[in-house]
Structure formats: structure tokens, C-alpha cells
Length: 256
Ligand code: G3H
Image 1 (cartoon, helix red, strand yellow):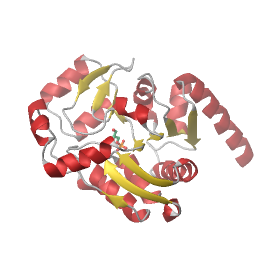
Image 2 (cartoon, helix red, strand yellow):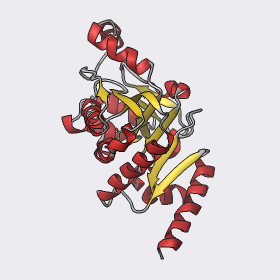
Image 3 (spheres, helix red, strand yellow):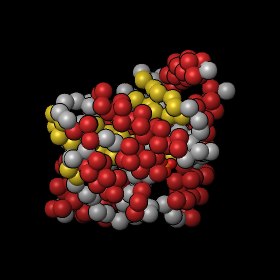
Image 4 (cartoon, helix red, strand yellow):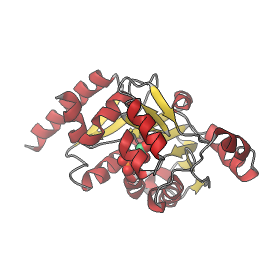
């Protein structure tokens, strides 16, 4: 039965790649909406993928926050550091989330697990473009932003639009805008609709989706059937060579 299962998953990977226009994807069994361990299994898959594909030598790895990224951080292994020197930076600042799932915390954990370095980005959730423009020049912030600009690897999640807006306690006005513009998903603080059109941008400093093009390696880790619409829409945003790690719950929902 295990062999049969694996063949089934491989078939689904081929179908999901075709459906989303991906070069690479990996599906773990189960649905992370239903079972918490499935997030860890995706984390483990991410660790194996990094072991295979992270360039040897120095890398700057930009990472996002969230519960999925926290699971990735828990599973990173010190063998990643055998022939590499890794520096982790938060891909963007200001998430208004609880500390254990903030990108700063996740970077610190990843650095600890891989005997690497990390550089924090301490920023509140920004509410205007003018604040972000003036903060950009603060020396401690400018130093981290420079590192983000040189990141050659990104590991991130994709979120359901309304779930993310609620978790980050966005204003009623922004919530109404997201509903009106039919936002389905969110990544890097950009909210998009089912066609992959960006419909709302959180004022922010750090990485944007368009920056992924210049990276050596981009890994998206997102599972659970509740994120199917978000992930399907995200991959309509051109054109990154992202490696998707997901679970069967999400894959089945897209493929059904
Ligand atoms: O941008 C997406 C969110 O960070 C996803 O968070 O992993 O807790 O669902 P999550």
C-alpha cells in the first residue's frame, strides 16, 4: 500500500505541476488543516529540498513568518551547514502577529539550527507609505534591507487573504477593500484575487514578489485545503521558478 500511495502522490504532483505551471512540486500525504503533523512533514520536505538544492558556500536566505514557516524552522537540520554559511533575514518587516510566528523569531531559530547567522528587522506594522520611506534610511533598518536586497534564496508561505487580514488585525476599512476586490490570497504582504492580480499592498519594507525572479532558489511551503484558492491564484503571478511544497489536502482541492 505504501508503494501504491507514493505512486498516487507522484501522479498528483505531475497533475498539479501541469495545472499550476510549475517546474517542481512536492506533495506530502494528509491535510495540514486537519492534522498539525502535516505541517512538520512539509517542513521536513523543505529541509530535504534545501539539502539538495541550496548552493554550496555563502547564502542569504530571506524568510517569511507564519505557522508553516515555524514548522519549517523546527525541522531544519545542522547538516545543511556542512558546506555552507547561511545568513537568515526576515523578508519583510511588520506583521502584527504573535512573536512565535514572526519572521524575526523564525530567522533566529533557523540560524540556531544551522549554526548560521541572522539579522533581525524590527519594524511595527506600517500604516503609510511616508512612514516607510523615512524608516528606510534608519541605519539599523537600512543594514537589514541591504542584506534582503542581496538575498539569493527565499522561503515563504502563501496565506488565505481573509484569514491573514484577520490574524494581522487589519482595519475594517482594509477588510472592506479586500472583500470588495475579491482578494483570495496573500504573500509578502501583497493581496491578490483569483486571477493573480494584486488588489491591495500593505505598506512595507523588504521583499516583494517581483524580487523572487533574481533568486537562485525560491521555496513556497503552503498546504491545507483552505489555502487551495490562494495557492492556485498565487501561481498566476508571473514568473518565478518557485518550488512548491504542499500537502494532499490542498492538491486534491485544486485537482478535483
Ligand atoms: O503569508 C502567509 C502567511 O504567513 C501564512 O501563514 O503559515 O500560518 O498559514 P500560515
